Image 1: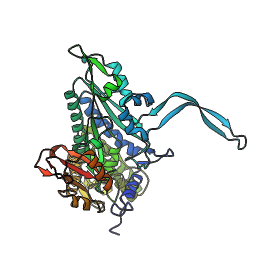
Image 2 (image 1 turned 60 degrees about the vertical axis):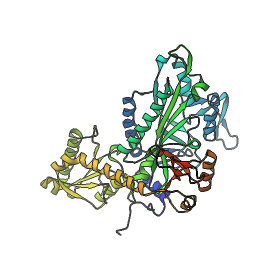
Image 3 (image 1 turned 135 degrees about the horizontal axis):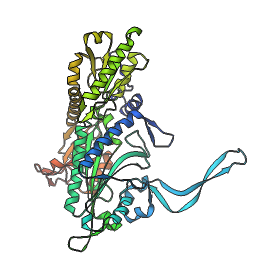
Image 4 (image 1 turned 30 degrees about the horizontal axis):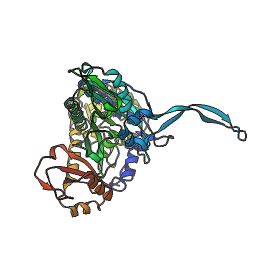
Length: 505
């Protein structure tokens, strides 16, 4: 019985199925009747709301403003930027008609809805918004005095995903996409790097997920970009997830879409543009990075509820007194305590169900701190404290006043523990590799982790190795491009650059 877990199968037995069962047990999301799409339920959407709120503050603090642009993009807009359009062509959903007409089947009597009114020009449901936002920018920018334009959009997008997986890959998903226009290349590159750092810091400081910041190779860049920066994460099956990207688009889009302005010298110039974004994939990354065989584990800053208080009411005559004490503690925590500037999110579970059922539900939902209070605890002025970063049987009795004093410290300790665990795991599973034989042998293993190698190969050579082992260069780590000289594992050419290779979601 000691080996029994709340989630079956376990991570070791079947990681992909474990992931689906964690989402189900935490009541986060479910598959929709619409193929490839998901319903995000309140517990899961609460996490996204917190990610959205906290990131939005960071965007606004750096001068960005929110706007909204159309869901439907004329196909001619994508045709203006061929390289960009080709990168998304196979994933596009196309709208071709603008009305439905009812027709009754003469045999069954059932009414069918028949698309009619074919559009003169088809629309694409946005896979990303560079083209439609570029069209707006071309109207908004006339002079260098109109720059920079710093715009962000919170929206949904659609990419027709063939192998959907909740949060990680769905046909429709939620994201933010930043789009900016600048007078000079230097300003645009500085913007690209600034937003890349914001993503890196957010994942570490809010989601307790360590990342490797790096640049994508030419093969892996965003379609139409001159430079793509990425934050790469390792999850518990040692695969990689691209958690966020920031792109310098050069003048590729501005020239295609005529985003031009009168420069300081009076001459016509084209803006330099950027785009950057993260999506609900962050939630999938969080699940795979931290959760265990008992369910979801949430970092406190994005936990839908940070503290759940469970009244223990064995007798009817003391029940109301216990509930009142729990409500009073919750109100004190909400009123007097904040965590990184936000009031604590505290819930009192007064449902009329067994305490053991409540306990396991909140474990599976990943609540950072669970508190139990019973009649005896009221007499002794103590609370039973249980932390999600520890075992389900682990508990500590604390004086209520002591808990009030250290509640936010415990939340920070939980964050630090999750970050340390994830960092230790990642670092133990990135191996240096300096020979092609070792490189080939590595990918024959199950769940092999990442390799870091000297690299000076061509895009064609990179593509050949990638296809051979079903891997990609996840990034060229920013802090490992000018180190000790080594021989490229494939060509033998001397290089100071290092590449990280891995399998990914």
